[in-house]
Image (tube, rainbow, N blue to C red; front, side):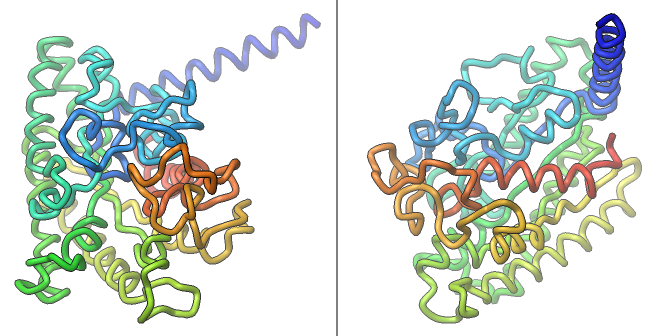
Length: 353
């Protein structure tokens, strides 16, 4: 019994030291982007694109809908926990949290936004430039709270997660009311987005960011909503291959941008977080990852429901989201997010440990 107790104490001390070491290298997780990483900022703005109601959040802590477009946690939450920090990253606009909470992690992301300001206008959400304004405000609050030296350390050593771009294509360029499609060819629009991405990284670099993860776009042609509306151009399984090819091409461009940024900006470390192939594997071979359904989502019919259309009154919503790759017609489940986050921690973000 004494031996077992001793082993337990040693293991506890080891885990505590490991957690402190990880948290010391990355003192906070700072998030910019769209619904893939929004932890609830849209709750506080006037937009129809919200998810702060059931069944969203039913597998989150206390079964609480927080504004995350998921049944549970999203990648920044899992990544924060993996770095020995809190198991979730709070939204900057959430009144339940203050600067003392944000000193360890903060999310500025807004569901529905994109690199292009025109994308945020579609659903009246927070544009990327406004996310940066909130970040500036955060820096001032952080300095007042932690002191100039500590604040500078947090800003410099934090890991910045950027996940954005899908809406620029699906909600903007390819939408029926799009003006961008008449202004740019597909290639020109991708060049335009790449310049915006480069300018954004330069901007936060100028404000102190040094450790940055730039996320690629997913196989957006295989999202349930796109599969449901894909009457032409499919590859037999319902995916829109045109959209997938655009996503792959844009990811190659983003990867090249990451190399360029690392060469031209002194002291920066940017990594490309590409989970395209992993998610595509989960969609095409779901059983290999413990899933049963990948072509439709858990919520409602699984074909088109998202936001307010995904409500607790739908009798069709699945009882076990862990069997599904997708939670709603646009977003993946907690389980999928966990698998993706573990993959990124092992293969991409490990250099920051």
